[in-house]
Image 1: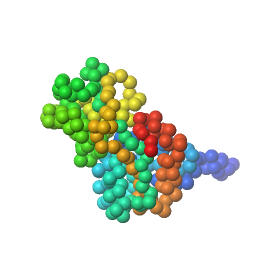
Image 2: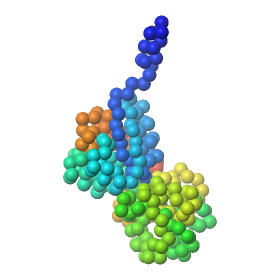
Image 3: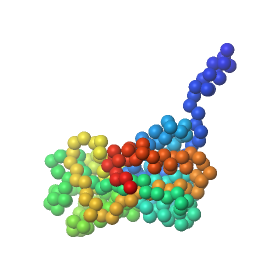
Image 4: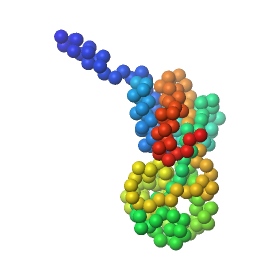
Length: 242
């Protein structure tokens, strides 16, 4: 009888067909979690997500980190990995175009170009422009507004866009350039969605890595990322599709 109960319990347990390890740019944290959960439910595969800066991930992958899929915050790093043989060139595609926003938890500060111009803030948070495309977009925006020199002494840099957001959320910075996706569901505060004319497009590419070529869970996850269901999630977080 005990053997039968154990067998029935085993049959009732979810069967995971496989597992895929995905390196995800920090700006895409929340949509990636939703997409992974939807894919797991649809496929039975397990998705293991790791979040961080695109620059750090690219370095780790080039040095042999065991990721099988890379969702970058730019197009350049996946292209470099493809050229270096760590990524599969024919499996690189744009999954989203990011939007930059200036954000403050304080409604009275009214995050806007005029707030930057007046200098009525002590600290301005951005992601490290050398490691994170959103940080580079923030620098480009400040320069386009001719405010970079005035802002430079007040800038605090996060290692990733996640840390840049945390500086603002915790009050360590009065204002911060963050990914729109990070604040879409956050109530209150003030925000300015940066017009795309102020910075280079934040084209976010995904790529199948060499380590995932023989893994059906890796190729299956990338197919799902192109699906209407995944695109609806991506769009809901403020990204442009296509």
